[in-house]
Amino acid sequence: MRFFELLILVTLLLAITVRFWRTERRPRWAKYLPGLAVLLIPIQLVLEGYRWQMVPAYTLAGLLFAITTLELSRRRNNAPTRWGRTVVRGIGLTLGLVLFTIAAGLPALFPVFQLPEPTGPYAVGTTSFVYSDESRQEIFTDIQDDHRLVYVQVWYPAQATAGYTRLPLWIDPEQITPALAKDFLVPEFVFSHFELIESNSYLAAPVATQDSSYPVLVYSHGYDVGFFAQNTVQMEELASHGYVVFSVGHAYESSIVFDGEGNSIGTNKSRIGAFYKEGEETAELYAKTYFPTGDEQIQAAREWLAATPLANQSIQIWTQDTQFVLSQIERMNRGEVNSPFRGQLDTARIGIFGQSFGGGTAFQVCAVDTRCKAALNIDGTQWGTLLETPLQTPFLMMYGERSDRLNDWVLNTSPASGYSLRVNGASHINFTDFNLVSPLFKLPYLGILGEIDTRQMERIMNAYTLAFFDQTLRGVASPLFQGFSIDYLEVELHTFGSTSK
Image: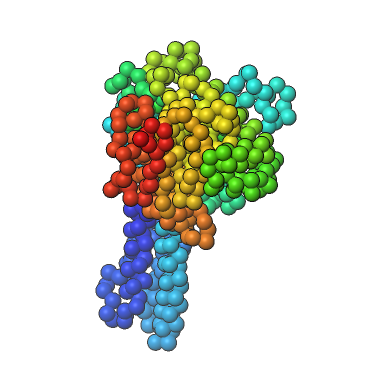
């Protein structure tokens, strides 16, 4: 909760509390509290901005001010009777307690939360690009000669941020917030306060020059309600440690991307519906891949993959999007594409990662493209061709508590070495920035977030993601992959290939 919001609520609580005292025992300053709360409202609106969660607090301040003014007026005119004072007092206290509970509860349940501050030595800059892949026809529209659009937001180590705009949580919250509200099936105003949340990133800040070049990471988001900025916390953390992170927006199968004119493109509802229907129809086949080992598990995975053509088609499209971005990165580095990164991208050190469907995309890309040198799948189901083209690069598979070991058929067939880890108490959504949105999401019957502390979850995500890429791309061994960590008791680590010896 922000400072002036908290100050208003504390003032209101004091104003209500003193009304429980007898009139003759109330301190003289108490009568000014409702007026003070009213005066604080415009200050809060100017300095911190409006959000709907504070409306009950504004209403309560107005009511208390009106009641106090009325009481003072009646006293001067000797108007009140004992009975009248009792009625007014009772009504005021009842309304006050009810409204204060609501007024304090809403801002706490839907906070203007702060992102964790990046721990690296660099400031963080960000920019975005929109590309058209002229080699591919867009299959999700009926427009003739409509080529595949690829949107990318980039986070990178910045030289200086003075004079540059610090962005909100999302690069265009006025368009992203309504899109997410629509996909989450809630009114637009519910997420409107996201526009008040600040990121740690500065738009178009100059690229840091401390190093001659920086390793590159390419990220893919989750399916449907996922989008390119859903893991801003991790993007900023990695950029602050000297990585240039390209987050790919996969058009028509994500909540929102932007075209070259800044117009938003949402999901293709027909495709999304067909995807989920296919998942429901093949759920029993998928369940058979959970527990068997060896040839039995491989056969179960083969049967399930054969029954999911839509998902496999989508992962190929997302893989092609990522490979297209890899080619654009190479062109940027050579100066063939306009960007601030000429000569500053170490294209010999590229890692691919993603969450959910994007995690599966990361493994698929790294199985077929030798430009990838490290692969991280964050709680993503694995479609694609990994039975025919096993993963060849070092890998890390992150699981939530319920999804633990579900992709072991992929990891066991890879000749590469790597790790899987389970975060106890974590759900699928805990692996995104929605981990921070609301304490309500932790209610067990909603099933959105697990029981893990949300700030600890971000620390785990940041620590293991950074340690993995430092180890695989920079050659800096991490004790986190030696086994048990006292700082992250929620994590259980498993090793594969040479790392298990």
